[in-house]
Length: 518
Image (cartoon, rainbow, N blue to C red; front, side, top):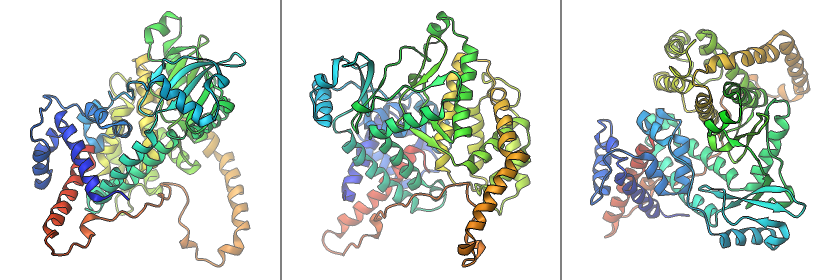
């Protein structure tokens, strides 16, 4: 187990990096920042040359790979980090200098127990892309197929584990303060982040996600997933079909190739909605570097380390919320929030509906160039505090992906209206899934299942079983010993112990403020 002093040292080191990038200036001048934190920032900032303009992305990039991933997640949470920091973090690109070809060879040969030449007839030592977790090389198999080979960076798993331990430690101390920190549930946020990154650090799971999404995407016109080469895939190496296409970020190249850019934008939006709402399983890292357009206009997605899931009941609620916002039925949107137990029952449905109207009305009928889904999410986040809404980590990936998809769609067609693009699909899905026939079929299924459970149900009171759906049961969280609960005897070292305890608490608060949790 990592010692508290180690966590404090890491937090202090990261804080000095943030200070050099000017990322602590706003916290230090915030009237809501506790005085001990301001003093600690001053201590960490000693002898640092500070940037004139805050560069949050630069700070996360310098801190390391785990921080880069965390920063990308926080970029879509202006409620946590503030609008200025969120805009800056959106520029955070997951790219690092590549690892040398010999190190890549060693990883491949050690993981397969075979020589590189046995697996591939040709292997380009120069990567086509290098990110914080892995890098990708072009290669040719023995049977002549061109493939992309993704290889984990040496030591990246160990470094992630070390940094996430400190995130967990800091989040536990922060949440123990109660109040707003407890409402935002930082421990659960870090637990979800840990689970997401665990998928990225096991390339077999990424391959499985790609395979599952490929099956789910068969009915999505103009969108597909590359095939996996399972014989050349393991936990540290992923081999899949090479994609010959134009990156969706290269708008001029797409236009020169004769593609219909507005049609591409709508296709991308519908592909995401069909994944998220129809299937409940979606590509949650749909940034511009992970999408290619083939000559026939088909969009091909790559990089499946981050995937999102939503259960059927939550998808029904999500569809009704979207459709309610599209049509202006704010009363129904408010009711769904109460049914899903996102808003505590002691609040007024009517008051919440009015707050939602203030968010939704400015958007209706306007193109993204004027107002956006991202701005709508900002507005929704702004009212969560007033209505005691707890953070819903299972929806964070969905919100993040919506912002990504909107950004890409806007780059292809600045005049696109996300509501207009989504409305026909959402309306049809609601009719098919929530209409009379669907409701009858669902009722028959539920009644049959209830009858089968009768012997067990008669031994229990019905109120012991809350409605299923809504916010899922949070994962079990490991016990973290709070430093101020440690027994410290009044020996000659007690003063040092108390000083460390005070520093740990202040360090945890500082990291939290840096990440925008307070």
